[in-house]
Length: 185
Image (cartoon, rainbow, N blue to C red):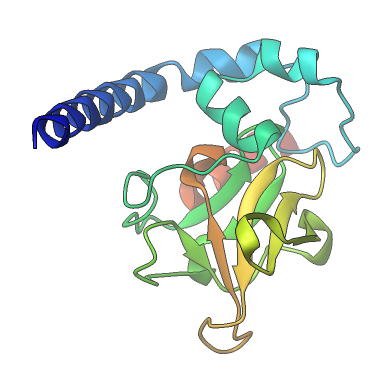
């Protein structure tokens, strides 16, 4: 009984620290992008960096999931119940991944989509870790781990891309259109 109480308090302490870290990381997001020389929403060239280089340019949270194939805790992503219209990008390199109109509420605890923005925007790999047969999804530009795809999604694809929100950036549709028109002139 004594160890159960200690374990409960330790878990609560760790959870609250994790939640506080999530609040601070959003304010530093733009600064991190400026320090990341490969981040681009327009460059389609493949990105190949050594692990040490990724560690220098990504936040610890993004690095853990994108490069070490980690998983964020379920129901903690700011994008899980997010309903803005726009485009989701890879937080590691800026590659366009999903349109908001393909996002749906799956109840799994992570942002879910039924279709990537293009065939080349993601890569599929077999994942047999933890005694499960799954299909891993990576960014098609930098090979960042994004999450997994399952065959229990809605029409028209029947797929559910279960994606870690930590490795996603989002740009509202109106903002993207303004930037596009400004660059066109």
